[in-house]
Image (cartoon, rainbow, N blue to C red; front, side, top):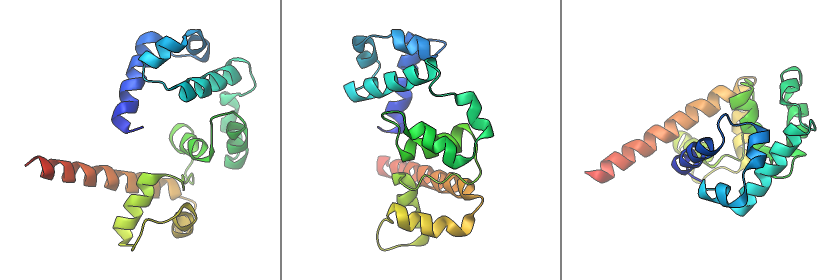
Amino acid sequence: MSLASARVAFTRLLSLASPLTPERFLTLDDAELKGAGFSRQKTLYGRHLAGAVAGGELNLEAFGGMDDAEVKTKLTRVKGIGSWTADIYLLMSLRRPDAWPAGDLALAVAMREVKRLASRPTPLELTNIAEAWRPWRAVGARLLWNYYLKRRATIASRDEV
């Protein structure tokens, strides 16, 4: 899902359930979620997550006192949450300074361009390159995303001319 389509889906979701809480999400039926842009699979995963939070199986408030590995373990126990999602949560929501979403496609593309690599690096290659940035890899991720977005915007504006 692109950033633009994700933004539209989130805006539609908020129009159905605002304020957005796990309990409110669970009241939405399949048709409402489909209208907001949720696939059947995303609906299922959203319900798993909302149910885990609403039922107390996943205590997001407790994450602040946990280390990154523990948070990641707890998140990935929820159906539909993988390593990338957990890494993004650590980076964006918890603002962990060393979070590194190695499976992120935009990071791989930006790294290839910035480092002038022959091919897009694999997640393991990305992790190896970013190892020198510990314990501040999240800063590197944000810089690479900024580069990626700026570069794509420049290319898009050039194509419009």
